[in-house]
Image (cartoon, rainbow, N blue to C red; front, side):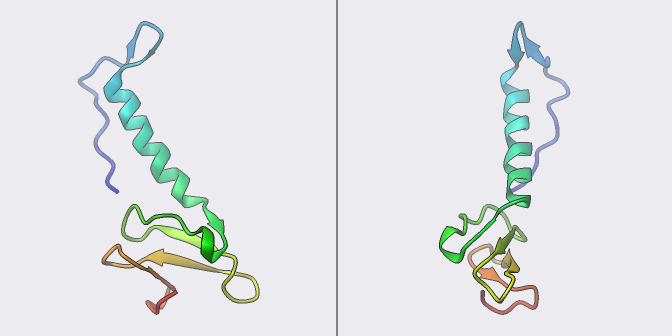
Length: 84
């Protein structure tokens, strides 16, 4: 996932709500920050949205382990690069 530059050449709001370009940009921020706090079991792993995305898998090890989207963005791996 890639964050676009903010739409600084667009008007911020249309009367009572953010304009469409700003609402879209805020949605990108929301999607990125939402992935930072995700955790759960192996069965609950989210779809990979970007390379390096982190997820704390509570099913791995005694206390759980952080896993990351691989450099290809297709699989989950442990910090050492082995399959999760």
